[in-house]
Image (tube, rainbow, N blue to C red; front, side, top):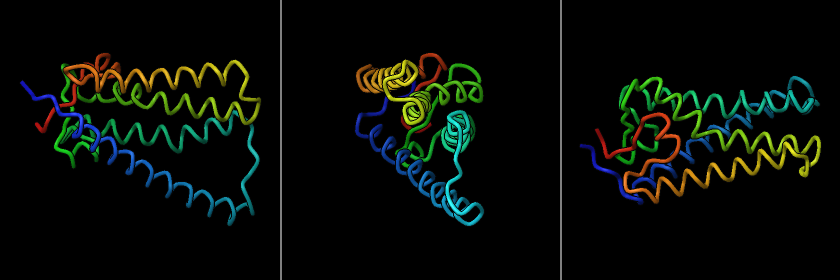
Length: 169
């Protein structure tokens, strides 16, 4: 039986993963800004749909794919988990489990993007903005409460994916 990691170990992994994602997003912003200004002389105007696709395909989708690959094979750990001595174990297929886990885990981020972009284009009091923001906050809050409140440390995405974060494997 694998040992459930402590709160400090989980927080360390979360912080390191957040720093990694922030570094990626900073590089992405720098590269996109350079491209926009060198190629087009400024940020091109986009429709709301184009902005939604751009945000999803340059941030949430690549990060989800990267974390799915890292947690679904090899050490079965994201960058933060590797450096914190943690790993993810699965009851079924690690590849499929990691995809399910990470799509669900990063869903609040995507919902937040959807709410914000819709709000910028159509107003923050529109039903889509309010619904996406509410779902984003509720999901993120549920994940954190479950991960830090349950004895086994599993959150909703772990339960659906058949996964569990454990001390090194």
